[in-house]
Image (cartoon, rainbow, N blue to C red; front, side, top):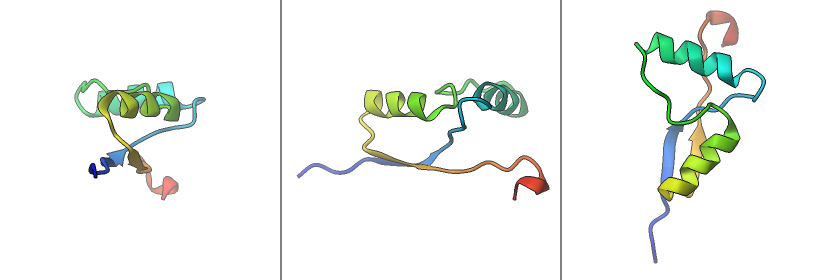
Length: 67
């Protein structure tokens, strides 16, 4: 029996806001390059490539109104 690989820290955004969200997060992190384009589809592609079976998608709040 093989182990189930679960990534417990991922992020994804609706396609309409993903480009801006990823750009803003990259800038806020000091220019770190994201692994995906921020969409669920690109997350799934990376998961398949890396052999990840499941992922937990965490929301991001960048201001108090998003809580």
